[in-house]
Length: 478
Image (cartoon, rainbow, N blue to C red; front, side, top):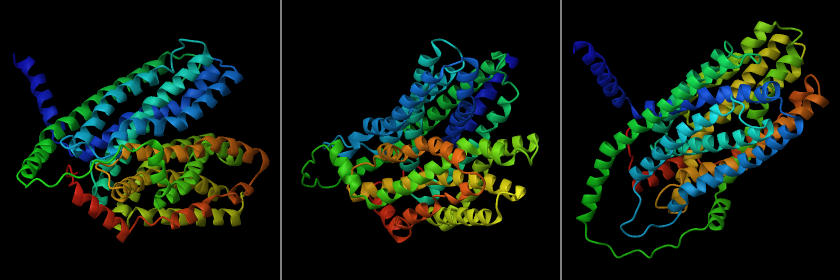
């Protein structure tokens, strides 16, 4: 009996420890369960279909074209389906409270997280014609990934309002994403185009770990908000019932998509942000797609294969680790100042590299690596800016509840073309330009101009947060 009791007691103690983890740690762990799969997907899915399944060129480009269209449209589509109910005033007695919104997003994560992991597995087994499988796998995988990203990012705005708490949430996302990047290094040991068995087992293990992780983390957060958070808001509801009933406010009509788009068109900071983010997303994916080509065409004759492999591996994990430092700076100086500083730093490095020329091998290595790290770091900080835009959208339009997932989706709709055109323009640049002429065509000046017009920082940001906190108190102390 003692032998049977020990594992049970150990399991109970483990569950007790997990339940007492900070909310920020549990929230951040979801990034681990995404990144361990997504990094492997990005590295191997093209090579798998081209080299292993022998997809033909026409089917490949048809699949990529359909995928790019769907990839741009599904963010706002899923965001609208998720949050359209938050855009209009609710019927008396049917108002949606903040804990209910959080629980709704957690339920969506608990369903779509495991489905995302299952869709990841569909790439590594040939079950249909390569062209058909390529199209279906890409669209299905991206659909579940979009649902996971939208609701996970929306929770960043719904779990906390203060910049300190949101920075803490994002800190653990970067920490767990860095751990998830290790799956890239482990995949090198099992990747073999001639014998796919070991790699398939590796992918099954990763997917199983992700399914268990999503299920456990979302369940822990749901239990926490069903007990602590809901009790707190039930108490507030009871207190409100003791007040003298106020005259009923005229009910607003439900906002249509056209009216919502009109509201966004008047949201000045949103417009300047998406202009900057469009260029930033292009720069980020340009670096991601062409980093290996830069090493091959600019440095292959001057550095060893092991050095190139080291730089390639570091490029996956360094942005996450570096982002931990950037987030500490955000706590002190604010996101706006840190992002502006990174833009100026990248611009200064580009000028130095331009003046030095491509013959300075070690300086070129530092420039290529640092440019990727700083660009990726900036992209990961911008989710915090979107959460501030969520706050401002709620205040400007007097919404009953922040439409977090919808705003994240609308940002993605405008900025996804940058992801689409990065490989097209990058290929053209590599074929037309050589040496330092590539670095002359740097869009940093446009980014800096757009970012300088963004006014949601300093006193204005403090005013927006004060108004939102006055209307909807913090749900959970991070």
